[in-house]
Image (cartoon, rainbow, N blue to C red):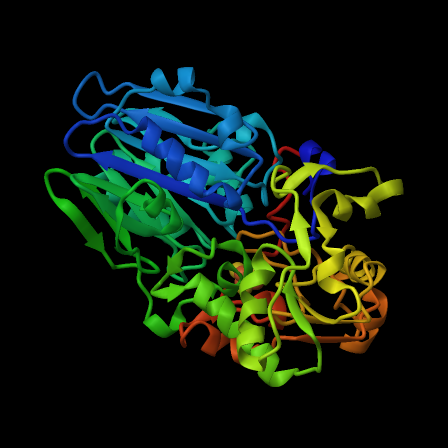
Length: 482
Ligand code: SF4
């Protein structure tokens, strides 16, 4: 699964990665959208930092599509000169973290396909569980793939179906009959912007509007950034097509009964930005709730509640609000590193946490600390952070985790790894407490997840092993060109 860059880059805090962020925009008044895509992608940077790309098209002129993609962060890949040379009133953008297919420039999105009806650009967030089979079928019928990602399987299917469909949204609908798994899609056709969300709604997708411009984005935070108002979420299973002639047209023929939806609960716990709302639930609010439940279910006497930045902060505030124990800041984060950086070699790996975080000694010395983090994956950094607090003079360190223990991998667009790599695999909470060296340890109870998201149906496969769809029978995360 790990591409070359993955070996060199690492999440400093042993966290998980989202697969991608998608963005699409159509200005019905014909204005240039390239810079809005750029700012939208900046707001979705947390969803993927390996590569990014923008494709813009002109719906009225020669229908030329201009694309630029590259490895790195949005503000590294795009310069003012590059953006100034991108013209069009319709566009899509993508930020990528690879959970299927390696991290290379060829695998960067959007994928742009020229075919008989014009040019299609496709941006995808999620993982297909039947991509290897679909890919083989396509290859046997003569398809030649340019990339090793499952998203190209989707793009191919849409392009093929388009030839025999009355519209691009009908082609997307036909493609959805074949693809299975997690996908939020934004598709740019010569005259329409199309968004689709898989029937389980694993990954988010919402619609925004700014004057006469319509937007599709993974998260509502991207709408705020470009001064657009939130219109609504795309429903699980829904296809929306956006065009000046018909406005927003919805096709719900793939929607399942609402209780079958399986939104990734980890979007709320960790992946999404706290200023986003997903399916009517505030991400920030859900994290506050998680902290409150931790305080109710696993109280402990202490002097200060602190969060491991950034995603532990809201839960720490919730814990403080519920318990009455003061909330404070214990860590100073180096914000210039980003979520990934060049990881120190195995021999000095432990120091990577200190590259990112340092402890405010005056805040913690002589105090009993409750430290809240969103998750423990491999446990390779929690022990380090606990030790840093002790070294700074904390007299006790109690760890609370605002999610249940990870026990199973994810096949739906995140990199929750194989069981053997998870610290909770074959260990009790007491075993884990000993490994990380905390005075006490408690996780959010599984039964609290539903309340945390206001009763929305959700996926919790990585905690329970019960997935909404059967897990794939072959490796979907590896490179198809192996
Ligand atoms: S298995 Fe876990 S990480 Fe994957 S979609 Fe479900 S809740 Fe999200």
